[in-house]
Image 1 (cartoon, rainbow over the protein chains, first blue to last red):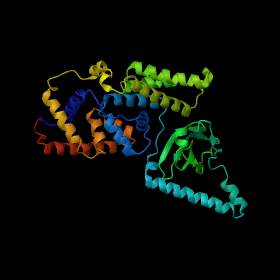
Image 2: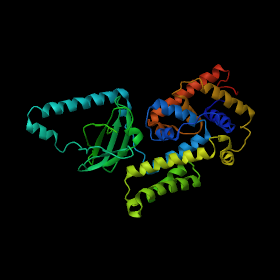
Image 3: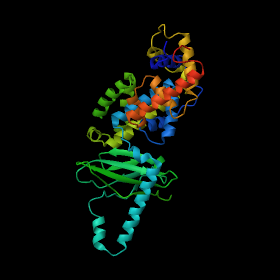
Image 4: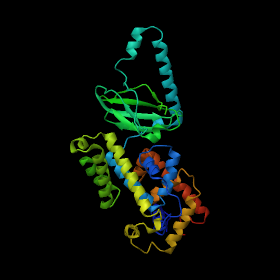
Length: 210
Length: 168
């Protein structure tokens, strides 16, 4: 008999059926299943989690449950190119250049240029509101004709910790992320009705001193 | 919330989740929204990001609760349900098939770690579109990785003396 895909699947299925399963192995935390379902975090870690899930019937059913819940609530779409570390670093470098440029121009006494840069072409953000729980409330002004907003929270290495597309103009960043001992910054990009986008300048997340 | 419970049924059916799981999930999200928002009007107007967070934490809590209830000993987990989900015995599912399965697992352990879970998904019956969707890849990339992973697997099996022309 040919060792075709179907034969391999039957054999593999037979193996999985024979397992009472991995009570002796450690199972990924539920948050790791969420990260896998929403495609957040590093791909290497997600593949490691997936490798376990695909050999563990209980974890596979838990992943299905998580995926169903997140899909029903509107799983945020990921921007894959932004997950490339090199592009992330380039994005930060570009952002720093923009900030440096804005500062240079704003201190040059060219009032007209300053007012143009503060025009309506970018998304305006509100100061971060720190909640008693330690979570961070992020909010921005509505942009005319915006159909969606993509919120991104990145760390100093350019890794996206949050990459969510939302329709409203606020987002609560969980305390575990907001208080992470890393330098984080956030930006929001509005997608307009004609498909074009406008973004805010990156804003650093600095938790209040306790 | 109404939309959520409707969609969760549709999506849950796609994942072949039992109705009880979907009820538990919907109820968990509803309780969270009620606790925080109190009125139907506010719940109906809940923002997508808030609903998303509620759905995420609800799923996490359900998983934790189940693990806690079973003491994380999977030997006791819904054995009847697992048995029911298994394919009925056929002449194909015999001892030699199980032996071949063990050799497949052995071969899987030696292929590139980044391809292994993809091949596992494929062998477990997932299509390349769903693999791509889960990992955030294009279907073409998922298909390519499955193809290369299966080629690796076959090479390893051949090295064990299991080739395309014979059985285990």
